[in-house]
Image (cartoon, rainbow, N blue to C red; front, top):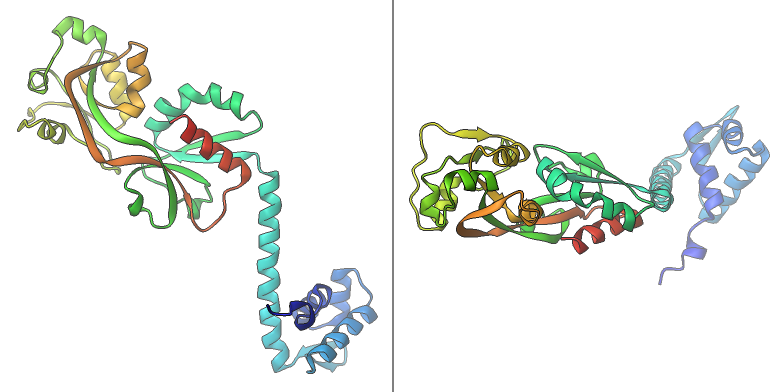
Length: 300
């Protein structure tokens, strides 16, 4: 093991050296550090003796870094800056009670909102902030600790991920629609009813032709159709009796359980994709974010 205690100068000496080198003036460094000019000069002299080399060229009312001093100052400044950021990161994690979760509007509205009361009861000291977007946000760039994404874990090499729900897609309608038009028992029967299409602007989503193909049906869409680019509005249109839509089970399960939606068509598409909770590999989760992540997985 490297004998750091004997090899590396004291932290106080390095802090004094960093300030003195930055100002190239012992008096200004002393004022910044709340020390006397004599104390700064003494600390620098002791550092030079320990290293066996002159770090400054003393001049009238100035102290210029030597060539060796400049190189050492660059390394010391970088090291202290990194230590300072790490210490502040640890302090902030200890204070943090706000946790931001990036997710689609559909997940926020249909999965999170019905569970918010339970979250407040289970994690009363945490203020969860949900940030929605039509695209998957860069959690590292946006400094967001947690996100929910659909796809495959290998698609996100810069993130850790944990399975939230597999992608299973059925067809759903409102009870009023079924009462008015009859229950479509098979995928083929669905082709005779008005279908509501989701046309995501950025994220890729399963379409009706893909869903029918998984049931062995070569579906040719009608020239006129109702297409909506927001899944929450798609489901609202279904609830209003406007037609039948694809239902991602992790999102519509509660509406089906409450009787607001009913499964139709008798077919479910199970894709190779899934929905995951993700968080950046580049930084550790705070204690609060870890608790929110675990809560999400427990309630999946």
